[in-house]
Length: 168
Image (cartoon, rainbow, N blue to C red; front, side):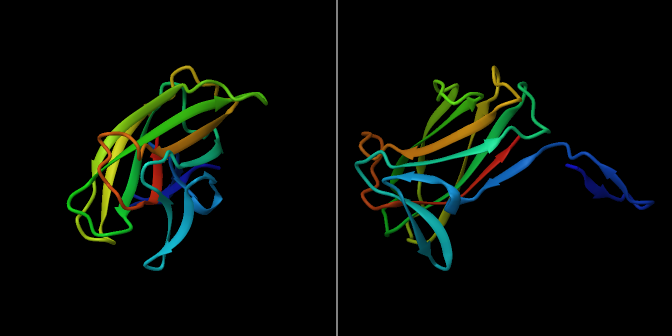
């Protein structure tokens, strides 16, 4: 379980991958303000301007990750309308759920991302989150939101989130 088949010219063998990647299913996220839309035959989450729309999900702690793991979170973003190289302010938070209560945020980041000037074009943005202090017996709550009211967020159209990949 959790292994991949690898061959280096000889007999294939089962090995543990060096990293574990998780692609979050956008349609399975809990949404507050944000909405799931069809965009060019692809699903996307849409976040409005001047609001703090939220998408939230929870995953079991992956067996390949440890509390020494630093997650690399890669987001694929775009805009619902044509922009003039607008900036969007986005935030990511993670919590470690081990009981029925919701703990404080344990790692977070805020970044400003310049979006493409053509509607439908995409840009990738990456940031890191540390799992230091997490319990491997719990699960990871991942929350993503746009800070549309932030002064650095100059995008007046809806921002679209097409994919979230976490690599540990």
